[in-house]
Each structure stands twice: as C-alpha cells, then as structure tokens.
Image 1 (cartoon, one colour):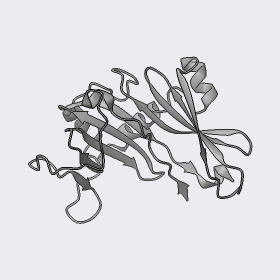
Image 2 (cartoon, rainbow, N blue to C red; image 1 turned 120 degrees about the horizontal axis):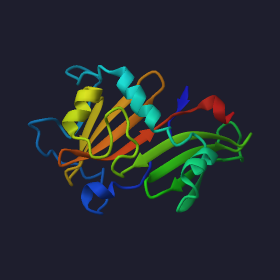
Image 3 (cartoon, one colour; image 1 turned 30 degrees about the horizontal axis):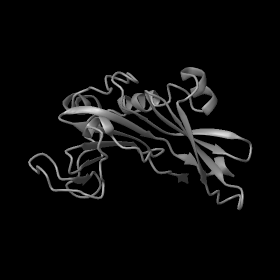
Image 4 (tube, rainbow, N blue to C red; image 1 turned 180 degrees about the horizontal axis):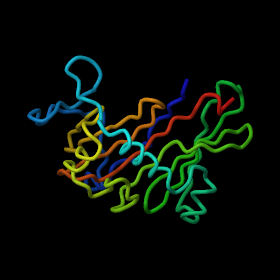
Length: 202
C-alpha cells in the first residue's frame, strides 16, 4: 500500500499573472473540448496515455536534481528558503516525520524525511521556469498540442475560473503523477508527486 501526500500548495503564478488559482471555484467554461473535471475511469472515459515510456521519462525528469535534500542542495546550492512541515507517522506515534520544502528560483522541491533512520524520499516537485527540466520533449513553454502528442490523452483534465487547464497523467503501477498546468495553450507549470511507501515510514 502506498501513502500519497498532498501536492504543493503553492500557486501557478506564471499562469495567472501572480494571482492564485482557486480550485474551489470551478466553472463550466468552454465544454466544446472537455468538461472542467474529467476522469479516465468509467464508461466514456478518456483513453489513458498510449506512451508509458514517455510518461516514465517525464517522471524521471522530476527526480533529475536528486531524491534527497542533500542531493538537491548538491545540485542547486543553498535554497532561497526552507519550510518544515511535521507529518504524523502512524507507525511511530509521537514521532512525526517531516516534509522539507526547498524553495529555489527554478522551483520547489518537497522531500519526505522519515525521522526513524533520517531517511529522505522525494515526494513533490514543481517548476515554472522555462526549460527546467527539459523532459522528453515536454517543458515549461511546450504547447498543449505537443504534450498530448508525446504523452497521449491525460487521465484527468480540470479547468478553473482563471482559464488554467490542468492535465494529469498517472503511472498506475505506483501512483506517481505529473500535472501540467496550461494557460493560453502553453505549459506554464509542471508538478510531480511521488508516493511514499508505507514501509518507508515504519
């Protein structure tokens, strides 16, 4: 069983001209292409991506700066800021684990630190800087059309009032996801989420 932690709460500033997107305020928008919230599960669902290799490649790009706080610092130097958030550990009552978020100009990296053993697991990454990381033909600045051409149809599509469309792809064998936030037909932000195995926190 896998433990899935929340994605970064930071906003897509580049998408909305420094205003935060509000996922609670959905609108029907233009339904000529897709509904505001579409899932690939169930009858009439959108077909999953035909290119598992491309998705795996893009997921690996989210890990390209390292999978521990030390590795990320080794690649990028000292972060602009660090935020520590305690996370309850169900296996070790009274001994919470920690999400360490490292903020850089190129993006935000969230590392799940297991208190017992001082073990790090990369959990979340978000970038909104053009060209970082390059990916398998996918990066900030890539067109929506090219995203679908490379990765296939997304597993889930969402759209908010500000016009930001989110395409979400999931690797079903482990639950790892990548979300591409699209504004005016172009990728403005990429978010990765990697599951933390339950046994890692034991």
